[in-house]
Image 1 (cartoon, rainbow, N blue to C red):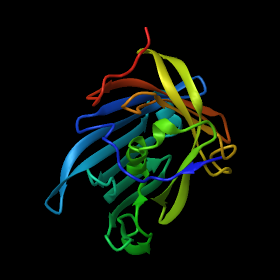
Image 2 (image 1 turned 30 degrees about the vertical axis):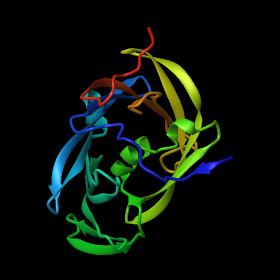
Image 3 (image 1 turned 90 degrees about the vertical axis):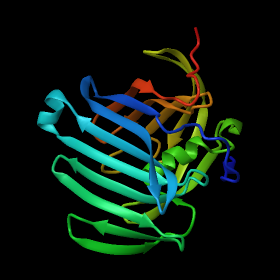
Length: 245
């Protein structure tokens, strides 16, 4: 089994203006939606990518378990390295309101607005936040060269600590979507088994096998029940979506 590292950056798979929405099902229930949008911002007089992710429950799901999540990331257009992240979530009463600032010396200043605290954490260099990780991996120069069983590993900062995030490539498959039959690459992110997920390979991710590397389907076997998310709408893709007739 081969583990590939990130060496040189290829042309971006995305650009400012990209937006897409997922429809999320918990079992047979339409549970909610999630969106990701790419904007532009200025950090230290430099134009950077500003990714905004939102997730929320709808209908009866909101009555049983209210979710209102906001994730943001500001990261460099050339290197993909993050400058700042925002995590403001409310998941059934479990709340967080944090902002993090990455320094060039390999540290992150985390401001916790809920508890009114500040903490500096040593993380090393070339560390991603949870949102920038997604875009960083879409740009991986070796992603089209992967063979079944190969994996990509990056350092990701989440919940005040750095973890090794490993994404294993499973293979390729044409799947049926509301947009037509889409050629995809299948990955399994290795997650922590226990409270949320059944086992380490409980999550499966399908991304388009084209220049966009756009996620079109996610399935997760949870400790209780299962979750499925399908691409429901999109606009502003940098490249045409590859669809088979």
